[in-house]
Image (cartoon, rainbow, N blue to C red):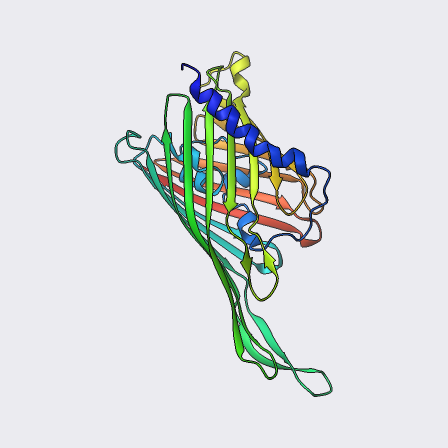
Length: 328
């Protein structure tokens, strides 16, 4: 059937949106753990308000929609990211994608995300006047390692998926008259998505599901990973005006997000690119208490690109991200 990919995309999008409509009236707070998986890693994406669901051809798509790997034109794409998160928490991310046969057999990708929470002083309940004593210095950490794959099934329809192992360690705890416990939890999680190019100018639709996994426990209480459904759309706004598109482009993106643990919101982004070398970006995330606007820029040349994003973050002042990419 000629329009089979479109029918598949519509079906998957509707299925993904069912939980969204069902959950709209609910107030959702503190229903998930491993929140480091919800923090944006890529400076380009973050500068555009995390509206990255339809972006293609870069290894960083592994952190947003793995279907974005499918149309990678280079043989190799590597990205290294650093996020200076709130309260001096540092997020690091790495992604690599290989395209050995120009997409004939699909594109393979590897992603790594690590979090350094810094040092924390451990304590233990004690029968002194303070009620506790100091124990060892703890170094909480978190990590996710993934293997992804994307493939273009037709000239318009792409699919992708990623399997990853996620883990978080909060150090040791000592309970009087009980054994020392190591607070470590880990699980296998899945991401998958689709991207459909409509054929109408550069208009594209995308759908993704991230962090699908079983329930986890540290002690007695169970929790879920931050499962997120997204549906997105993007287009080059200069498709509708007479502009030299070899030297100018203005990408406009909109994502509708349905997280498990907090209310639905909209991600809106824009990216102006001049001569495929210099980019200015602006974004907005709705429904957030401490932040909303995002901004950034990027430089590209000789197979290298450098991206920066800045997010005003209320009482936490700001969050800054840096990304270095190499493509060949």
